[in-house]
Structure formats: structure tokens, C-alpha cells
Image: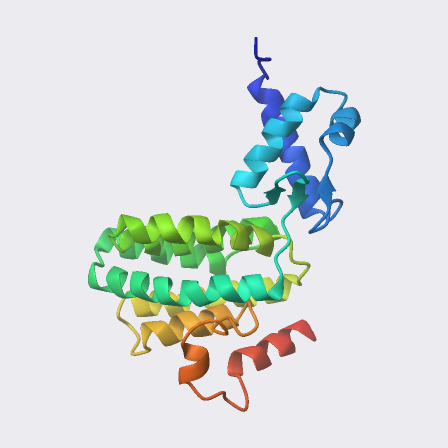
Length: 236
């Protein structure tokens, strides 16, 4: 007979492990040993395993066959490959959302950006707002397969961003750029959707287009505006 784990215990354990990961107690790449965690909380391994599976679904934990569970760690190349696909898919989602815009979608997106402008909370809350804005655009595009592709593709990436040790000012600066995407979606800007997505990703990542056709079809700029601004914010 399978052991029935109280839902309150699972919720409590997931929250405790999430907090431990986000606080840096467990760092990217660290192995999460079921037995050690079970002893720490004085419980059996079964609820620990269930909690780790839930964290895996949220992208904070990765499971490697015959090795176990580890805190998510992405190489710079992994991030660039994910973002190179994002550029293509998110550009299409942004174009479709702009073409299918309704007052309710406009209100939802505007509300999210206003919340970003007023954000004064934790870094995980900022990351959640970031994902919610992008997911709203994916849903508004009206193509369920875009959503089904972008969701799993970016789950690990957005989760990994919550592990970044960055300043409050840099996070606020990154959030503020969502208004530029909003203006493109609302057709209030003449900026090309692909250029808007690319600039947006450059706010957070180095060379997000490296593994896309943009890397070979566009000449490299001597000075990248987004990179320069990022360095200025980091130096403060």
C-alpha cells in the first residue's frame, strides 16, 4: 500500500526546499540528496522525492538518470541555444498578439507592466511577473502549439533566472523594458517585433542570438546599447 503523504507536509517541504535554493543554501549544480534531506526534516524519503519532483516541474531542479536530482544549472551555451529559439517563436507570438489585440488583452498586459513599474518585492516575485507577461503574450497569440512549445522550453530558463545574484536596481531596469514590448504589442511603436524581442533578451543575456540565423545574417555592432547599459547598471 502506497504511503499517503499529507498535502500540508508536501507544500511545507516544497516551500522550504525552494527557499533553500533561492537563498543560495543549495547552489546551481548542487546534488539534492534525498536521504540527507529526509534526515534533516526527520521524515521519510517519499515526501522528499515528491517535493523534488514538484520542484523539477517548476524548473528549479533537474533530474539526471542514475545520478539523481540537482539544482538547475545551465551553461552559457545552453542559455544561448534556448534564447536563439525564443527569438523566432516569441517574435511570431508578438506579431500574432498585435494582430489579435483586444481591449481585455491590452488591459491585462498593461496591468502587468504597471505592476512591474511599481515592483518593490522579492527577486522571485519579479521573475514571476516577467514570466506572466511573456506567457500572456503567448496565450494571446491564439496558437496553442506556440504556447505548448514556449512553456516547456523556457521553464528551466525562467527558473534559473531566479537564482541570479543581481542587484535590485538591475532587476528593476530589466522589468522596465517590458513596456517597450507592450508598446509593440499595442501597435504604439514602429519598432520591428523581432528587433524588440532581440533587444529585450539582450537586457538579460549575452549574445542571445548566437545560435540563430541572426548571428550570421547581421553584422556585429561595434557597440551594443543594451550591453553598455547593463554594465552601467551593474557598476552602480
